[in-house]
Length: 75
Image 1 (cartoon, helix red, strand yellow):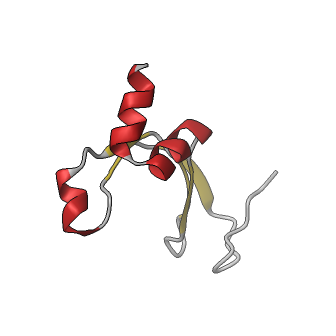
Image 2 (cartoon, rainbow, N blue to C red):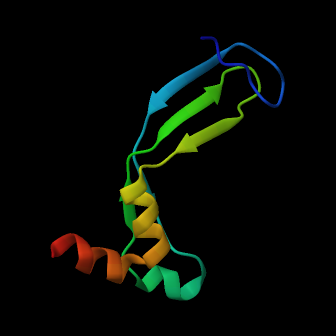
């Protein structure tokens, strides 16, 4: 099934695997551990619109925060 870009309607959308290091916002976020994730990207090669998807585990780590997430992951 061909994916169409939501912004420009192009069919030039390709899927990519990636890795990202997400930092929490604000000055306090810089002192907290970041969350390393492996999102899937769908990128329009015509206009550059990019959409990404995270796993439920990665979303949970972002919801609860790095200290709680790291503690949960170690348990």
